[in-house]
Image 1: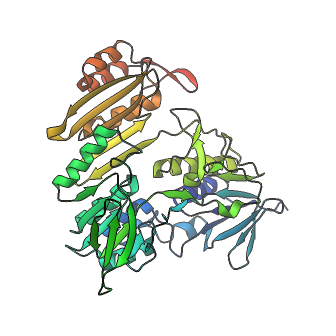
Image 2 (image 1 turned 90 degrees about the vertical axis):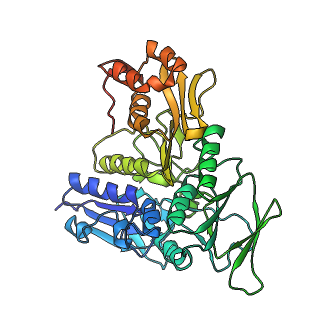
Image 3 (image 1 turned 135 degrees about the horizontal axis):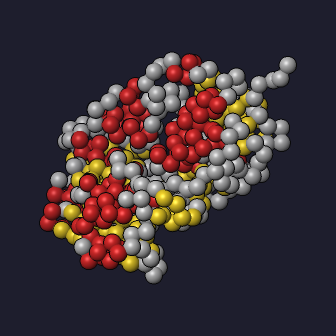
Length: 435
């Protein structure tokens, strides 16, 4: 009698859940254990803002809405927190002393919020916005007209900003960078987003640090002291200062780390039969062909699917994920794609209408579109993604777009008629898909 394979997946976010489903689709008899680090059903962190502004309940954040989903797949879902990995004996040691043996293991352990060394950051009323537990605490304080300070205006911070605005909070946003979303947009786009927020009644303070958080004399509220010497009153302070991968438990395991867990193009780590996926993993950036941390949910899902196939014995290389971010900030849609900051020796075209909060920037290398930014121009999202992801040679349309970026739709339709593409895997013929 042949013993069935035991797959263990550490982490129950989008990467882990997708991997479990993929493995089960290709291996019907294996034992499959999915271990989540929180005492909740698997859920999406990106759904938490929708919970905060009341458009969904907690159940709506769950990655799979059928409560019997994991049982139906014969997936053993359990709560546990990894403390140590022992690849030599193929065991994961959990907090509390339990050792879980595996034949193949996926590390989909995600990331955790960065805690800046700010005095008072541990006071009651100061919270991250990363878990369902965080959301429950925020909901106790984020009343209509409540003064709220949001520390951080990156991608995550801007999503939280939208939710708190929808709740009717009086918002002050403090960002250490010189503009909002500095890691996904340039000065023009980030500045435009900041101006939009100010026009909507949000106080945006950039190029400024939080020096200290303290309680007021009555002890019921908070005061946030900034590096510009201003003191901001708050009932709630929400920290959104970035995240870091959950890799501390891998110390001494032999799993090689860089910014995150290093993997090959089959998402295998340096430990035998150990794979990695999602926000903890250095996957390939499609635009550069190099490992990078692309901590966005669509990439986590893609990693989970590819890792699951490889674990189940179906060799599937990861050719790269597109770095793509889309934000809805109080009705203003902004997005960035690929090498949005351009490349040395490249060519740039842009179109700006500050009075209407509209901006389009295109970055080219030779005659390929390699990156783009949009503010207030939602029609272009699918076309930009398609052109960048497939690496279309734009030919004469590159020069036309340099002169008139507003001709993007015409350019897309013209070059999408079976044109030859030169991408990471060489020339091929394809048509990009528009959502």
